[in-house]
Image 1 (cartoon, rainbow, N blue to C red):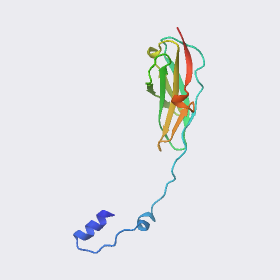
Image 2 (image 1 turned 90 degrees about the horizontal axis):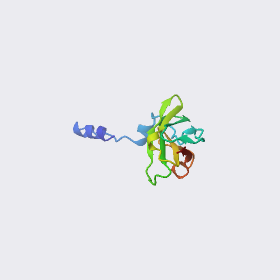
Image 3 (image 1 turned 60 degrees about the vertical axis):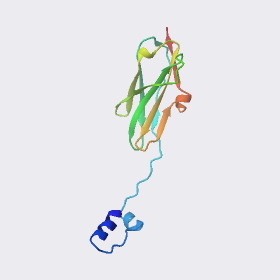
Image 4 (image 1 turned 90 degrees about the vertical axis):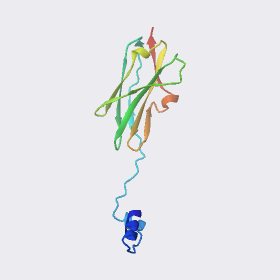
Length: 140
């Protein structure tokens, strides 16, 4: 809009400023996506072996497009507030990630999955995410 008015002033013409109606009448209005992705995941329920990687899979779908899925995890006895992260790799709607066996220090591991779509809608599995993660034990 500004460039049309500036151009008219440069060439000495009187130009009517564009109105919102003029600009919007040919514009397609898109709906806003407020629907978060859906994460389906069977939590690890068995005790895992100390030092072994743990494979995590989840089916993630969205009404528009999933942008990324991240696996967050930490050792329960670590005492750290920091979560390790692993970008989960897609194969169709199935996303795979790994909890590194080198991060096991005994006790157990807490983890959750985060999915984000193109509109920045977020979903967590379990629903509580960081505040209520999944948990599995580690055999010493």
